[in-house]
Image (cartoon, rainbow, N blue to C red; front, side):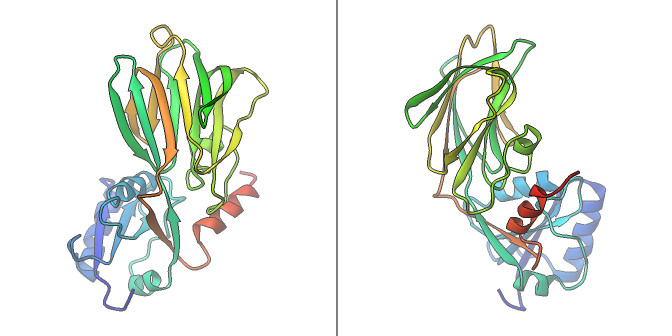
Length: 257
């Protein structure tokens, strides 16, 4: 990047994000996406994920500035010095998960997830799931609220709340984590190679309906979900010096909050 960076700003609907959008475009201009060198996302982590999903085609790097609720994936907001921050930023390349969900009606839906793919029960009935990894059945009787597969970038989100492991960026691993398991009670999940293919079958989907979600994109009443990493769609996130994503993830492992 250079001093004459062409920046495209995007913002969530939160009032502080919209105000920041007005301030920053007035100060630095607003390049069209077809001419931009970088996208600056103003908002919270949810907006950052939305912005990253729009980069599958143009592959522009994304620099987030915190003007929302949760900002783990964002840099601190400041009006001044943005070009210098962008030029000195550390890059983190991440890869999405591809979710292929087959509904109880046979309809197939494909979505991409940056953080995780999760399966959750839709009613009071516990989900009954069978887990296959690389074509081999690994668990035939998981009774739980659900299960998720998380990327390293998403391992500190829902996965961590479900007591899954934190994965360093670049670890080439995926976390397979149960959500409130009832049986087997002591199973806490597994670490899988990044290129593992996970297939989850829903047993008795009519009596025990399950929804599958790729980040925030939900498909209800699924019978089978296949999950794999998609290395054909790399995304680049930018972080201020000393606050790179791998450093944040490392700090999170020592956090007692």
